Length: 201
Image 1 (cartoon, rainbow, N blue to C red):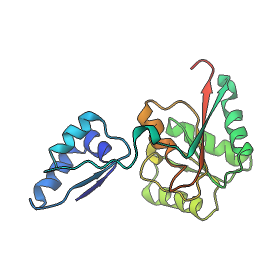
Image 2: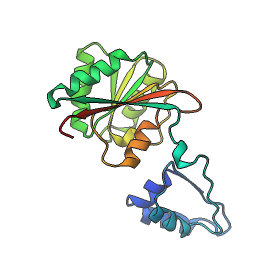
Image 3: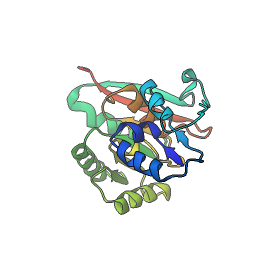
Image 4: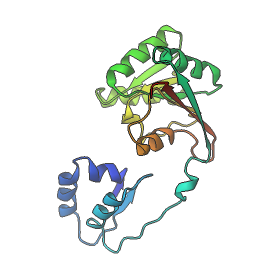
């Protein structure tokens, strides 16, 4: 049994479903849990689904995102969209992922970017799986250069050649920042992460 993003699977209400699956699985099995972040409470919970567990850490926490250059843009609240556009224009990135807090913000920013001539697509939880797959495929094959997304894109998505991640607002917690930013700077490639921060934050 393999669980990717195991911390979310164990933490976000999937516990009953996991218990059902584990109950149907053979007792003699290998259970592998993967995640870039595992809080202590989740590690304790994971022990209940594993026997003789061994934890493998591939990097020390101080080495996370060594291939990502973080940049901070302090802006007035009413200048945020201009800062996002400037971050995209100033970058020589082949593709960029722009994170917004809400679905409405994703729709609004995508429309604004398309009106400004960017090849942009949206990605959010309200979209059908086929729409999400089409958006990701358009990023992979170069038909789109910018993907504007909610945190649905923060985990489990691999977009090759993604050079730039833009946070249109501060993430709600450090783990969200880690997962969002980790979409770039992967597999030995360098990446840039820009945080757009209103001065009042």
